[in-house]
Amino acid sequence: MATSTEQINNLIQAGNEWKESADALLADRQAHQAAYETLSSDLRGVVADEMAFAATIDPDDPAPTGVNGGVFNTIVAAVNAAPASASIQLSLLSGKTHEIASFVPTTNRAVKLVKSGASANPVIRPQAFIDDNVNALYGFNGDNSNVLISNCDIDLTADKVDAQLGWSNKRNSLVSYRVASRNVLGLSNCTVTGVQGRGLMSGQASSSCILGLYSVTLDGAMYGVRDLVTAMLSNENVTLLNGAALTQGGTVGTNLLQN
Image (cartoon, rainbow, N blue to C red):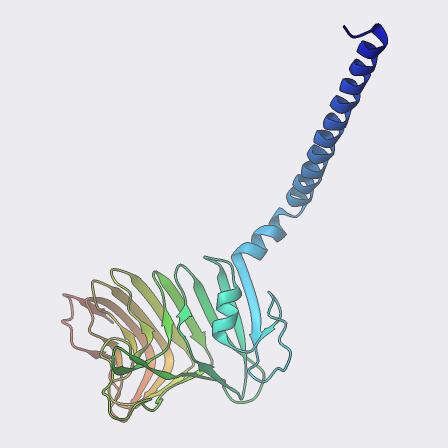
């Protein structure tokens, strides 16, 4: 049977253990409280970091920072670094060509591309790749996406990767369709250069397209919206050169609304 001294020592030990546990819980609570206070004092900044993402795109920067507010080499890398569902604004350095060498993931994102600098408009140039034994074109691709491009030129003239294969009739646009999805593309003060079979948007598999063009030149036998299921086209001050067309197929008032 434990002596009184042993019982007292056991009680003291239990008390010390309880105190250590209580101190640890208190420290943890204080740390969380400090985090909550920091969050509440800068809630606007926290929300801005999660919902707004901005960067400069310089394909020639040897040491891009790769962070919000910093520099990236490619449009794709910057969009991939942004939080999900963020509103993204990318400043493309003027006088440079910005290659798109993989699909830009635009699901539930608003992506705005603008010119930065006083020289010639930056050029956005999707590259070709092989998809299901045909040549295809990279571009913007996602569900419920919103892409706005201002004061940038777009080059849709990439050569085939394999000259022996034809071109895809699904993936040959700046903005590709997604099944049963809605996509928006707006261009202002842009020149788009293309060739036969290329275009700005494609709509298949119950997808819908909204295309807005303001002060835009379409140069080449390209289309505005192809294989449309449901589309809306709004345009003002659009110049069509060398066989360019705003739409290909569709019936106005049935599956196409156009001003």
